[in-house]
Image (cartoon, rainbow, N blue to C red; front, side):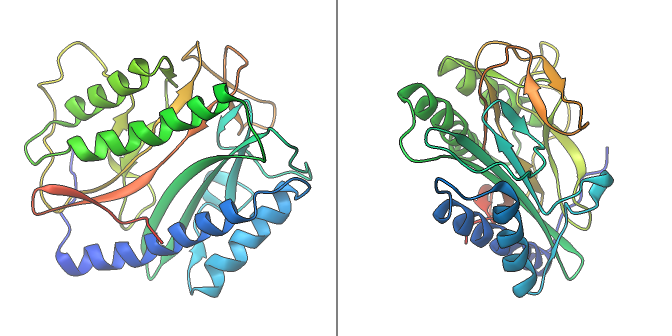
Length: 252
């Protein structure tokens, strides 16, 4: 496994691509209101990305048809935007990628529409708090498997389970690079595999299920749901390892 180590000027290029992602996510969160359609939100975010000189990197990636993954209620990741109009109490996840001057950005949030249930508030908080807890835990010399264990323990400690078979990933000159970073420990030994080093750039993205970690992919071949049929949540940031610690790049 070859994990790229980026120079400071390359990290700044990645920061620029990711800053646009952060701005687009803020715009979507502000416009998450009853009555707006998923396609309208997708178009709004695409316009924002293009107006900042970047391309929406998910559009056409592996055949995905839109700029934003809009994952509604039971859909945890990879939701295709439709004409559906948001309703009070919905939960919606947005995942956006950008390409700016050959460098990629990627992040995701999940938000509630209007007043949501306390159960859904906890579901969303699990993804967000797990992400920030994992970022805080990162140190140079730590193994990626140890980071996966932190993610899993954080998710399970909040009473939820991680979605299996999808993971965080490296990012740079491609939208997906080495390493793969599951939200759960694979195998029993976290003290093996590659170590985190200064200059590494990667995306952490806890994907939360309520009871069953097994995935189901819907008929459109994109929307991913849990086998339990219950709502999920998803949060993601791109981070750079600078001076021994993780620095979030995907903030507006």
